[in-house]
Image 1 (cartoon, rainbow, N blue to C red):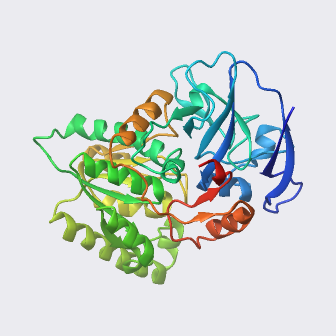
Image 2 (cartoon, rainbow, N blue to C red):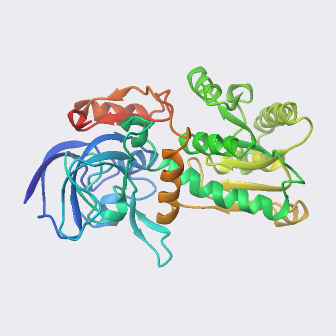
Image 3 (cartoon, rainbow, N blue to C red):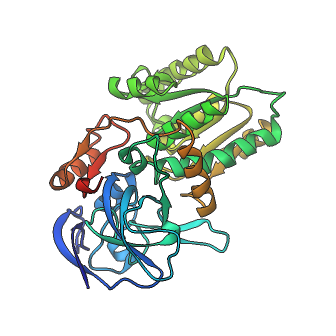
Length: 384
């Protein structure tokens, strides 16, 4: 058996949020197709906070396990390989590809370190992985291991989603029709990563945020920052809009300011592709900002997973809707290869959280008290 220290969560019988507890786990002996690895750095992901809130699902109950170790973004050092693993060796540094399970075509169905049964995530000092869950980082690398640690969810998801979204847009609007489409984004790190990628494809890009620090990060990434605080009441509730005149007036004022900002940036044009990982509260505004033949693309639903749209308006405007989840394994490898040879990466110099401070990181992330889009934590920094 392999013993390791880990931050774990357990199922509860009431509605309280789960809490991280530091415990010692025992992992089964290494199998021929497995790799024993030591996580070096991890990146706190939104789905980890969802698991602590136990919303939309209780991960422990879903996995039918009494102990769950979260963490699906990070970098590991290979310690030992099973006899069937031929192309990795002790000492290799690898980025995690968090495909816990996939369908017959390689598309993700369960996420390692989240809802995939039996997976021991990056909140453990030791874990076991399969070969397809690791991307060996080329050495020397132009990027730091901490930067690589942030790519597993946000950047791989962004790459996969962008491939589908731009293909969908180009199916109607050729390069001759719109050589440099405007791409806008709501949301966090995935949207930032996808907008960086869109810019590298020659698109004009803008992102909405509500703090000075995040607006500065957006600008530093070469993306036009749009201050969310200029339209504070842009949070649509259909029932309240119909019944509360004061609310509807405030909403319409904010929507008007938002649409003016779109026009100012696009020069009376509209958005070609809108990355909307927020969901229901901003969907109405997203659609009003979208041009004809435009695409709304999403890989998340941070503030609402139900869409209510007019099929008539969508058809008349030839709007398309793209939805993706996670990443296809082959596309993950393609994305990592692209990152290895380009500057498409999380910004360097992110502050890191120490191992024993991870519960505080979780609390601060859940309460939206962090300015960074990529909260990096240390697990075994001595192996970096």
